[in-house]
View 1 (cartoon, one colour):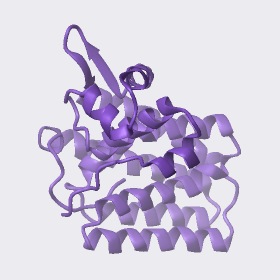
View 2 (cartoon, rainbow, N blue to C red):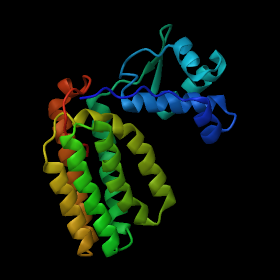
View 3 (cartoon, rainbow, N blue to C red):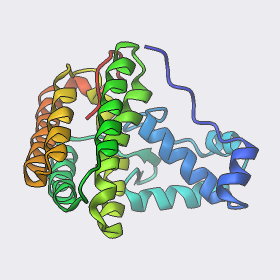
Length: 238
């Protein structure tokens, strides 16, 4: 599988996305690097290297690391500096408990889907299969997110959606591990959810979403000692 491109933030992207805030630039760089696996779990973060890559001094890097500590992406160890928060079974269990509770309720509360909405969801699932066959892990993860959030954004609850987005930032680290251990079951689970939405049965769709997330957790739980290593095979995200 091709290696992921390193998350470099250039000057144009910085000015357009973050204005003049160098702290925001560093926060986005480190956070996305952790999510993408460029900064591997339980590895030390080197402020000098990050400052050079982002074109800043040490001060924005230190501040960014404190922000990411509050978000749970970075852990400070006494006299050892800043480290990427390690992945763990305990975190996996809690994360998916919360996802199941909050995301399933979002499905129940979602506005009815039009035929166009259902067509778009089914097209996304088909594109996931194509990306999976091409070993395009990042594309699989992106499309998987699209499928879920096309549904969740219909729940008419900005606060709930914000919570889901926060959970997904952390869940994506596990999703990128799961791509090496999955078969086509997730695509069928997606189709089941979409079929229930097409039929207007949001309770059944929510239950199917719960089953979908629970099966992901069970898979990762069983494979965790291996899954925590860098992904080297293809699969599908959940």
